[in-house]
Image (cartoon, rainbow, N blue to C red):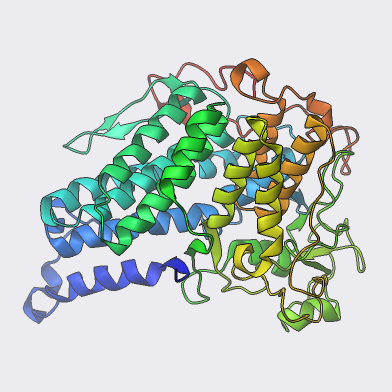
Length: 496
């Protein structure tokens, strides 16, 4: 089957809006009569073209909160950064306290970055709901696009539950665009909403339509992911089997210099405000020193970095805590326009491996992990410059034969779990999975987790900028939510 890649470009949304505007921009006599030029009246959006613009706009929101531009000013990163810094994927090498609080696991409610992270995810939900209503009215035959919007809504709901503490409200708009304020919800409730959204996505994905196939694969991956979050191992196995996700499936967000850089590249490779983690806080994984082609890195300003991006001259972190020879630069996305695959067949195989392990099928578990490793080129991030067939200068070497070395059974269930989550961490690095995985590891077994001690999973001990790590295992609900009259307080508890 051909490689399936979806690319959501902001220029698509802009071109649709410009085309719609051109229809009414020809009468020069009326130029001076325009009122409220900064406001688009909903009554002017009643067309099939406008419905399509709303769909593309919702996807652009997904692009914003993953690897693209979010918000304004100096805090422009999305959930892939902030979830990774609470985990062990990223370090704050900046002078902004908002980033340092997340890095040190001591986030205050007044942290303005939390407002941006929450707002970005809620905007996806709102945009998807608006697109669903408009598509149903103006493009009733295009059910696959409706299904895609249900997936986008479910993805946002899943991301809220995976990354924030218990207590996030889910507000909405009524038919007259009035805010319907939501009450604080436990993450279990939000996960169940996400499952309902993914089910609706599949119900609106008719057979024989290319976009419908993509929707089925996306919804299958994400629903199974949520079921594992909830500890429903059997359900996850049924879901991922039914989805039949191809190995080479990739759903990617794309970035252009004209409309917005890949912010993972911009804030690490260029600005030096973030740096990949390596053995962070005693127990963090060795993403750099492992010298693994799934997460290639280089020393900032080195010849290896410049092999992939001649403009990579950043050799010192923004806060000067890491100087020449110690500032790490990621190469998974080596340029400002590198695509980011936010859902892949890779994750489907990893879910199948976990289901096998948790149902005591060690043979299938190991075979699934080794299938991934034996097919490095198929399962890696598409912008990862390393190759399994041709040695690339500056990349960690891939052994002759084009495969990563096969894994062997470590012999105990605990060691197998360690190996599974390590493999997940390297295959899915900086794509919004690691924090949720770490939360699952410390969640009680009675709640579907693995019951690990927090200090064996999350960075702890002395923090390199002073003091010690805190105890946050999530992002906190922002202070801005106090504007919601149904809101009671911040996090309802400190549980994973």
